[in-house]
Length: 335
Ligand code: PEP
Ligand code: MN
Image 1 (spheres, rainbow, N blue to C red):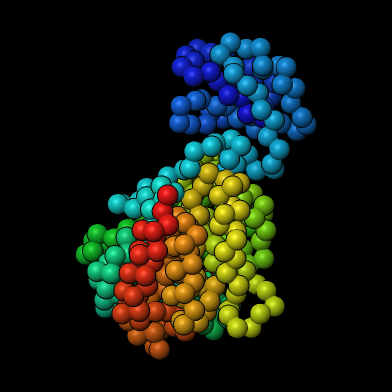
Image 2: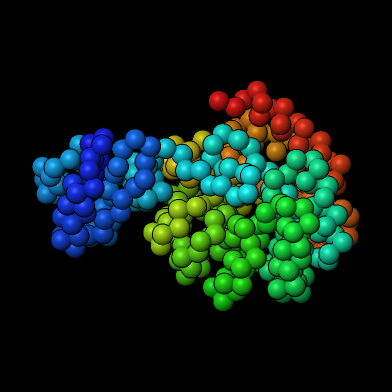
């Protein structure tokens, strides 16, 4: 249930509505909006009787919320959420680009890649220090040393850094270094990790699970927001299908579908969807045409020697080509 207050309603009326909600044993959650104040009702076991609230002073409307997700839904908040990190804004019709290697490998590697992606126009740098690998024998990441190298990248280039927290145990360490904490595909329904991310002051990049529906993905985001963190960026990265011509299938239609359901920004990672370098530029162009709220691309200075995901990593010169093509499309398409 959502209670919409009249424009210009004073604090006293708002607090009286909050008290009335809490007296009935529910949780009241004021929603910051453009020109109206709304108050969401959460943690109600059954249906809520609107008559309890519709007659209170300052109440304009009482709207039943039909979706299982509440805080992340467009029903609760109509305006797009803007997530600001450094100079980048996700959700305001711009197209911020996050670029960098799959994994942090060494200082020369990250600094070289960071300089080149920055020159080409990337606004944020990515790199995994803790890597979720299918095989226990594959490179698992440099851990804290990798995070320190990311801090060096930020210091040298000014680019904010995005890196993954794989579990609750290392979350505190990761958030100390990261400007955006990534929750990876394999962890989309790791509910304790989602709750921990919800207590963080860092924005969270929530990747879609390998076979997650839009509803399951938004419920995962709800876990984060329910804990108090409203800075969430969704990231489509391809889903598992029967095809063999790409590593995963990039679900482009989820972008307009998600925008209808949620006020959160949604970006796309064509690199993990494709798994093959040749497909990344055309898919990135499609992301720009779709009005995605950003793009994440893997780039490596020596992809053939990369310790992970070399086959999908672009050479720096290919990344420059991608940036100019995407920017040209974005300039035509943006609203
Ligand atoms: C990554 O971005 O480094 C990564 C592991 O991606 P995903 O969780 O989408 O597989
Ligand atoms: Mn990768």
